[in-house]
Amino acid sequence: MASPLSWRVAVTALGLTAVVGLSACSSTGSGGASGADASAGIEYAESQLAKFRDDPTFTLDAAPFPMKDIAGKTIFTIPTNSENPYNVAVDDESKKIAERYGATWIEYTNQGEPAQWSTGIEQAVNQRADLIILSQGIDGSLIKPALRKADAAGIPVLLTHTILRGESLPEDLRGLIDAYTDAPLAEANRLTVDWMITQTEGKGNALIITSDEVPPAKAEVAAMQDEMAKYCPDCKSKVVNVPVADWATKIQPEVQSALSADPSIDFILPIYDSMSIYAQAGVKAAGKSGQVEISSVNGTPAVLKLQQDDKMITMNVGESIPWLAWATMDQAGRMLLGLPPVPNGAEQTPLKLITEENIDQTGTPPQPDKGYGTAYVTGYEALWGTSGAA
Image 1: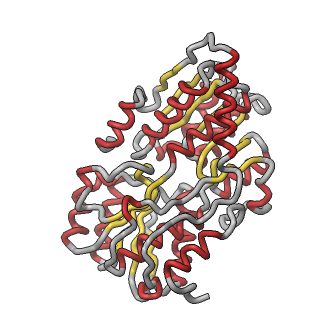
Image 2 (image 1 turned 60 degrees about the vertical axis):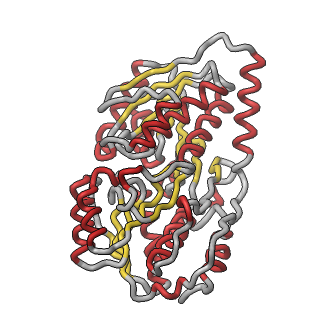
Image 3 (image 1 turned 90 degrees about the vertical axis):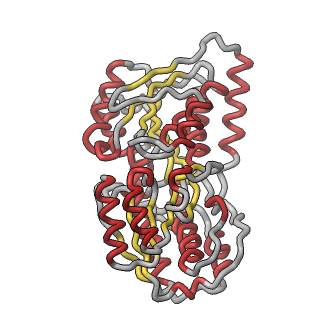
């Protein structure tokens, strides 16, 4: 799937060489870095990680509105892929909030194919939904004819967790996507590199796993490579691209093959943590348990359970799933009531490091609503003017 122009520009600026299909590219550290350079990089990485160790605070400054007035409205939601546990978890939490305030939530099950996303939009139009949500990573540029049908029917469209923080909606989607919530995924993936720097004393050798067809993926990888270039000149990295639909069948053999070809790889950095399920299996198949660590992004409960039990995953840059759901419903509520959305999708959703030291705070086994505090609940309820029905 092609990435929109704004992402391609961001990627080019950071000097990323794209990977195609299941091919891989390698980059090596510059070598010969002085001890002072290495120490400075480790110190920087430690300072970045320290910013995200505590429970986050609610910082959104937005206009209040009466969320109770969405009662009777219908929200039709199309996730990127219903087989992805992260997508499912966020939508499940969003549904709870929508129904708490009296709205109807319709979830369109699919396997991540653009043709299925288009069919979902057509069903939403036929059912006269009040709002369509494209949830967690859909590339709207691939389904513009369907989006035009929604526009012609007067149904607003919300795109969630796809546009990177600080980026704008691509030009070709303006007028077709009415609002979005941003995603701090570039920052989060930089933190996985910072973790590797501290864990390897500035000498890590990483296998980065990506999915190029996910709109922000190339820019996320570019941010990771930029972090290594600036703060870990002795680090190495290799990038492997596995399409979303192939995660369950191709990540494990790709990881196993990479570890066999380069036994010095000591870190696996999947850009999304649901990939870690299959990456961990690849490490075990290669006989590298205890020699390779995994660090990733999202904080999916199923992956945190693996982290808690197996300890091959040593750090996860968690995004509170309920917090993302409340942010989704904040934008959704504004759109359903014909109010201006939060500009630039800036719902200020936070990040938190989940490590061996604090993972039990997420529950045993981990639960979506534990480990991040409850600042988002009191924050959003104050904006919405009511706590809704219990």
